Figure (cartoon, rainbow, N blue to C red):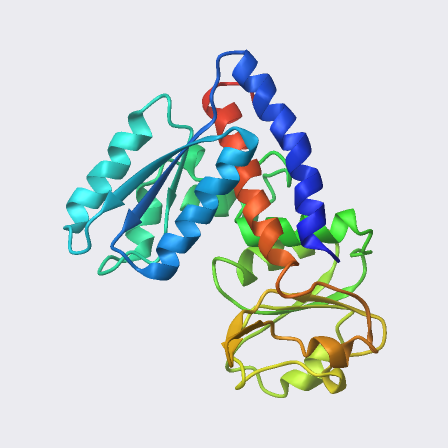
Length: 284
C-alpha cells in the first residue's frame, strides 16, 4: 500500500480546494509553534511548511526559545486562537519543560489541526465525527484513508493495534471499531503478544523499538493486512516494526517504511487545516 503515491494524488484534489477558497478571498493559514531548537523537531516543522506551500496553504512560523515560561507559551496560543486570519494551530511536540496536555488544552478546538484537544477527542469517542470533515488525529486518520482507498475490508475483521497512545492507538482503535472491526489493543505489558498478532486480519504496529521489538512472519497469519507505523534507526537505516522482506510471504497488503503511513500522516495534517479553515469561516 503505497502511501506516497496516494498522498500525492489526494494532495492534487486538496490543492484545487485551496485554490477555490483563495478565489473567495479565504487563505487557509496554519500557525506552527516550535519551542526550542531540537534538530528533529526543526526538521519536522520545515517539512510541514514545505507541504503547506505545495498546495497553497499559508504557514506562519513561530519560534519560541527553550526555557520560556509556560505562561508565556500558553498566552501566545491564546493570541493565535483570537486571530481571525489564523485557521489552524499546531504546536510541535514535545515542548521542553511543559506538560503537553496543558498545551493541547489551550488550543481552540476549531483550530486544533492535530485533533488532540479534549473536545475533538471527545467527539471522536462518542462517534460525533466524519472521517473527511472532522479534526481527527493525523496518523489514525491517514491509516483509515489508506485502508479505505486500497479497498481493505474492515467490517467483521479482527484488527490488532500495537500502541495505546492518545496520538495513535486509542483514536485508531475507535475509528476501526466504528467500521465494525473487532479491535484488540496491545502494549508493552501485553503477555504473549505473538498469540494475539497471529489472530489479526489487520495488524497495525506503532512501536519503534528495534531491535527490542519487531514482527516476523511467525507472528502473522496468512493473508494479513500489515500497517507499519513504527520507526527505528538501525545501523543508519530507517526501519519499521515489520521485517518487511520476511513477512511478504504472509501478507496480502503491507505499507512500506518509509513511504507508507508517513506521507498519509502529512497529508492528513493538510486536510485538517482545510477543514479547520472551513469551520472557522462558517462553511461547515
